[in-house]
Structures are given as C-alpha cells and as structure tokens.
Image (tube, rainbow, N blue to C red):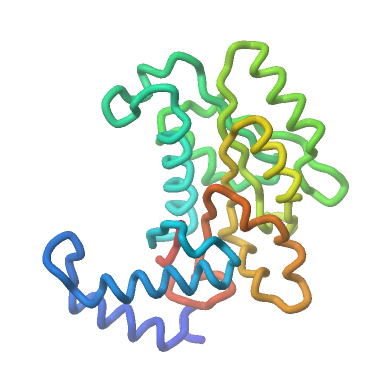
Length: 225
C-alpha cells in the first residue's frame, strides 16, 4: 500500500487522467468499464443487480447523491421544475446521533435546513433505537411535517456500530419512507466470511453510499452510490 492506495489504483488514476474520456458524447470504452465496476460493487454488497449506480468523489458525495435522489422521488412537487420553495410540507429525515457530520452538510446543501434532520438516541450497542424512531416519525406527522427518509449506519466512525437494517427496512416500508444507508465506513463487511451478518438487510435499502478508499485501499476520491 502506497499513500493510502494500492499501486494499481495509482496507475489506473494516471491512465484515466491522461485519457480524460468524456462519457457525455460519442462512445468510449469507459462506459463499459464503469458499468462493469458498478456491477462488481453491487455483487459484493449483495445489492440488486438491476439497480442503478454512479461513482462520485468520495463517501460524503455518495451520501449527498443518495439523499438527493430520495428528496426528488418523495417530494410532493416536481423538484426539477418547482424546487424546495414549493414543497407543501416541511420534509424531515432521521438518523442516529452516531451519524456522520457529512449528513448534516448534505441536508443543508439540499435545501432542507439543518433542523430537518432528527438526531435520535441509540441503544447500548450504539444502534438507532427503533422505538425512538417510531415516536419521532409519529410526532412529526402529527405536527404536519412530511417524514420521508430514514438513514441507517453501516459502521459508524465513532464505534463501528451497525444499525438493524431489517428493522429499518420494515419500518420504512410501512411508513412509505426512503431508506438510505451510509456505508462509507463499514459496508464492505458484507464481503467478510465471519462478520457479514452485521450488514444483514442492508441490501433492502433504497440507496447505499460506499467508499472504496477505506478498507479497499483504493485512491482517495472513489465513492459510489
């Protein structure tokens, strides 16, 4: 490992930087390379192969991208035409108090305002408390808000905790909410033969953010949604 990334990753970065393949016009082999790499990521995570995906510049942008899609899908207006200023109800999101601070930055950049993100207490294993989540959602609905997204943690930075994804997925489905998983730190436990159970249910999420720099020892700016 050299400088936080493998020599192969450094070589790949040098080649792609020199080629500068523009994927917005004509046809480049980069299309097929990108598609194959995304399929590998989905396969390793046990994520549905028919899902879409995109490589971005890191874990923070990967979370931002997933939350942007969640907003656009579940906003009660055409977000592309009307924007956040036209939403009829304040949209709210939920994450444990162990969530990464990049989530708050994403919320602010997406126009929700920091107060829209509910930081919820955790249990003795530093996982989001499902009872507290249910109470927060119910309270916000009663107040006229629009609870639309739950964020699960696949390995928190502070403790390495994994939320109960099956419980979160069941609740999100019942409440007709989006489930996003911040897996930038620990989603790759899915390829472990002895610890993959920690990520059970993660494949049920509507979106997942991962970072190939951590654990996988690839160059720094490689995130994926």
